Image 1: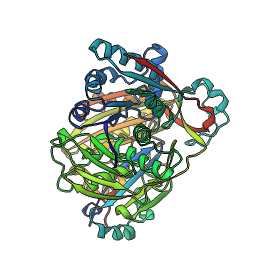
Image 2: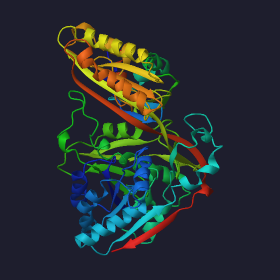
Image 3: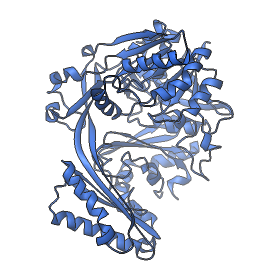
Image 4: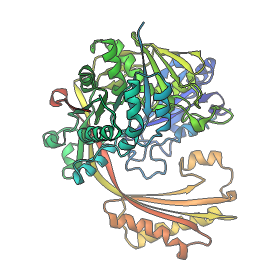
Length: 99
Length: 451
């Protein structure tokens, strides 16, 4: 199953750092996200794109995780050579991950 | 318990005006805030101000004010905005002019100054740059702007002095919303658990439609009614800091716990330490409850004491980016696009172009996620019906950036067969470096005009 079946997501940017939320549609699926979507797996999934550390923050009250990915935006929003300089579309990529 | 109603009239510099007008007409608002300043916007505005000392504010300011000034006056809705960009006092004079032309009277308009520290930038040359890990002096000669992120102080002072419209330069986005809450409820600015709740409300509103079903729809998974007409949000804020997020009835979009969750986590890093000039908010204990159609009750944010320093965005002239694109279709589209990409790369080597970094993408295949993720989604590259080659490169000067763009265009007559729709561009890139300066270095001043 793809993450998209149980969660939704939005990406934000600050300089060369990208943050991706991962929010369970149903409260009971939060535990599954917690177990399956480790920062190590997220770093591996984005290995072509993210050159720095991936940190995971937990928001159990909201059934959500926040992944903060360093050196993720091609040198920063202004000087990135990517077509999507802000990395806005990275949320959709995270939801493609199989669990 | 006393409540106030604050609307959000813009989520970025170029945002739509109709939803803001609708909000002022039908939202029963006390305040509306327009957030119009991205990280880089001030550097660009500073250039405009250098050319013309009466410019350097948001270029939609006149357009917006013509539409909203009559409503501000008739309905007694106070307006707070960072549309002043590099020149808040010129923006105030422009608003005064428009009010006079439209016969709107009885308004006090305030400019909050003090964020612009460009004139004293020399004394910070030994400060460390957050993004680069180097001293600021490595950018000497390239710096074009320096603006501190201000908190609520100037805005609250203007409200206490009876201002109806308040125009700022760089302030932290949530402060545009936190300021009227502090003023209306007489909150103690050292009561950080309350301040944390106000920051939460500001953060939920600062991107306008993004909390009301904008930037949310995903057909079949997250359906949004009438997305074309998505409304802008209203916060009903209680004296204890609890807030209901809602929108004007009959507008498109939706306000649900899901839309609010996406927005509260948007652009934050550690949710227990969301740092703003007015305090450090902690979002980890927030709870959300759907309490009606398009009504979500949010509470539970806390806070901690503000930091001793303020963040300063330093704008500098960084580099150039040259770009070109061309499309290929039909059988073999990918193979021809790939050949085209190889040709451009060889040519740039051959003519000895000086390029810091070069990137080659195939739009429709891997331009967003590169190969590892893209290959998990596309079964067979050779079956794609069309592929668009994109080449972009970063250079120190314009001349070398032009070489990149021109080599892509030259694929028309020199490259693989059937290439079409070539486009090229060369841009000078201004970037942002952040430093942290002592609060005591920043002197806030509020100037007023009346009509």
